[in-house]
Image (cartoon, rainbow, N blue to C red):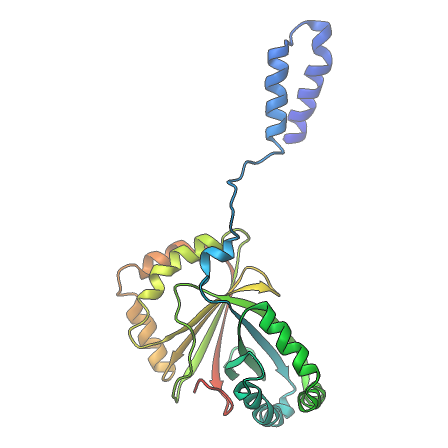
Length: 274
């Protein structure tokens, strides 16, 4: 349809001088209409969208790692992580903290998930990476770990301003990682709708942390929840529908989601979150 309109417009303009139909005024209107097909006005912003959503007073950067482990190697993999990861977490030489480490129970099978926090943002991440290259124990760990993995991927994340900062907690708990692939340009609308709703989910301290991706799969959102067991999860989620505002938030945000995934995870012995 656009091609037909453009063809008709060009034909009018080329024939106008012979027939005398076109004036300079009409040509200006046609030029304006033609340009409007290709030019879209946007509101200028002085800040990136990420700055509107995260805790600007804190420069925390998070890294989430997904390791798909060979099924026969999962126990050996967990033991290897228990021997190495807590020492990095406890060593003040590295400006990073192990927030949690889990094995998936429901969802993707034979998968390990690690969540790290870097206080100081990207400079802290770079510092840790440079120091770990000089750490012979960590180099050996990576080499041995590589023999146990089928694949791995990671993302760099920022935390939402309206979520709690994830902190160590006593167990036993199960954790749910709900991951949302948003439609392009829907991120701010999704966050603004969910911000009020998350405040409603604080009754049982189930809201652990909320993050959005900066590097890796983009337009990704991760919500981390803690429950005593699967029945507690079911009861808590059902109760949320009785809170005024929750159903409205779900109604407006579902159309903004392209894909969603849920993992039920069990913390490993090395996890600060139990």
